[in-house]
Length: 506
Image 1 (cartoon, rainbow, N blue to C red):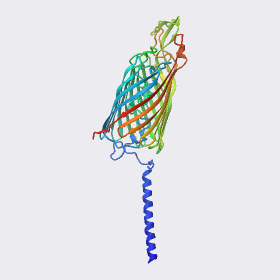
Image 2: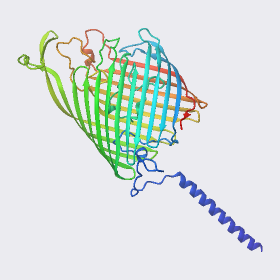
Image 3: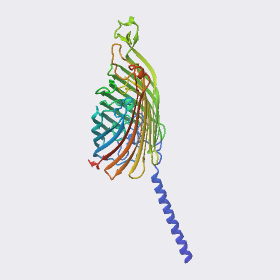
Image 4: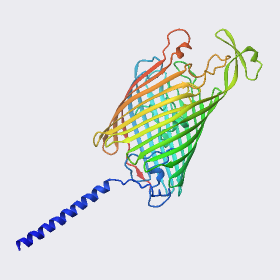
């Protein structure tokens, strides 16, 4: 009897252990996302009970990027916020060779709206307020920013309308946390190609910047898709630099892009892209650029996103004034003037150039750190300094939660901008718009520390260093005497954000 009881007890124990092991294996299997099968067709964009592939793994030639953060439940909501900050800055005028320490006080409000329908998504971000620069000649400055995205989805495609608007006294590249930023309108870093932004700033000059983009994605087969986008961006300056009297160059840019994408495997995509850029400047210059790129992307859902694109760029420049002989004076458009006490004749000409354009992106989510690195090489508007620039733009961002209430982040950026066209200043003009340099570089580095107080209150402290430098040709073109071509700005900020719980709309 004892032996039979012992055998029965051992059998019960073995069954229990087997069941426990099976439950443990099942629990582990739910934590690992199986690799997608290359033979399984992707669900259609509008298919019920299936996420749209455009959001999970969008085409690499499109404007959207996959989300590396954990997915939150889709909600329709309205959320308001209030933001105050105090900054201490050196060279608050952002002047060449400037010095002195002053304060900046900011008070802003924000509003975020997200409205979801069955096939329509609307996102709206607004930030507006005032900043008081405690130095003579600046005082109160207004800041307005608006980002809008409207998406329409159907069975195999998606149409998006995006707009990013800003009115502010500085550029958008490298804005310190808690000061002037940009709503972005979900352009995923593509503004280097589409325009409507600035890569460096000098002085405190109000400017209006806007970028509107319409893009569409259409799935042809489970493995192939096409994308198309068209955008219009402009930068308009509302004054001259009070320190140097520089008249900045406004610009308008029309851009278009079309691409064919092909899935190469469970984690790889390839694409062929054609892009067009058309620039028109307030100085009367204009030029057009055509870009052909081959793209490759490697993505691991929720963890890594890598993309690289490279190809030739063909640029056509119109009405460029170049020195000519006195015998050409009678030709249409030729002008006569005195330069450095000597007579000079300039005539308009056209120019065709072949260069290169490219882009690289790496986003990686570690267990605790999120890393984001980008590099772009494109023709840009010149940020008001030049009538067009060949720009190299690199950025690095990283963020890490320290514990439940503390987190930290850092960002580093650099842009090198070479004049795309010779200084197009007619011989009859004494005050040429823009900056008389051939190259300018702008860089920034910053870090911030954040703390949450409950669910609605958030405090932060940040530091950022900005550096702007023109090459030696800037001083060679100025009047004799002392010349500074470097601007350095150090800014430390403490701030408080109050963001109450969102109001559900559905």
